[in-house]
Image (cartoon, rainbow, N blue to C red; front, side, top):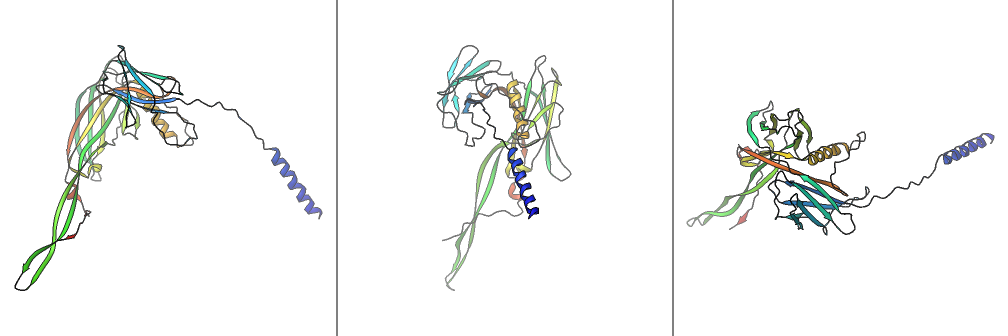
Length: 342
């Protein structure tokens, strides 16, 4: 009995010590007011498109929705203004003002219950490609690959920021085979009717316009945005010089193209804000699922709000790739059969 009493006393003591180690602490955290989020890129030669939403609590997992009842105004450095109109595509748009390179634009937005916001962007001058070189080869696994080189002259004595992106445009051909039960011939002497299947084919076309994943090993590259299939770099290694940015992509993803594909390679001259936004956002995506990574704050240039107003000018060149017909490469084609009797 004395032994059981010792165990009971020991358990009681441990329970007291455990309860003594617990303490509820109330922390008074200031609630951050909800702000307007503005995201838009002003592109030389294009009209104005802006997306507006609002900030949310960190525990809010509801779908992001557009802030629809806002007043959005764009003004250039000469005092010309225009009010954007909200559309069914969830964008605030205006077709009455065209963005010009070398000009500074300010976008302001206001809505009931929110502080008014504003942001300014200087549209860079376009940097045209001097030359686009391409070549095709096959790797050790027999996969066709394309190498390209974009040559351009970097403006001297000013910091310049660039983005390189590749897109493809091609048609997909789908063949439908229709087998129709039909009469082949009739033999009146033998009172015989011979039936058979008649095959009809129908070709359908579908258009694809999508980003192309490519790789590049240039030393000037500062970040690779694999989510959008693009790279960004500055001229800190080649200020005022002729420079060549290279890349490579494979043709395997074009295997469904009907007979050819057009590849568009675009050199974007972007402003510093857009450059920092892409750079920090890419690092944020890479770090958010890594428990050992340092949190990354995405660059923001919206006064009294959150988001990005960037500016850019684009120069684009293209190449056409001839491809074999996808039907010729099908080992086991899928037939869409439609059998009917006549």
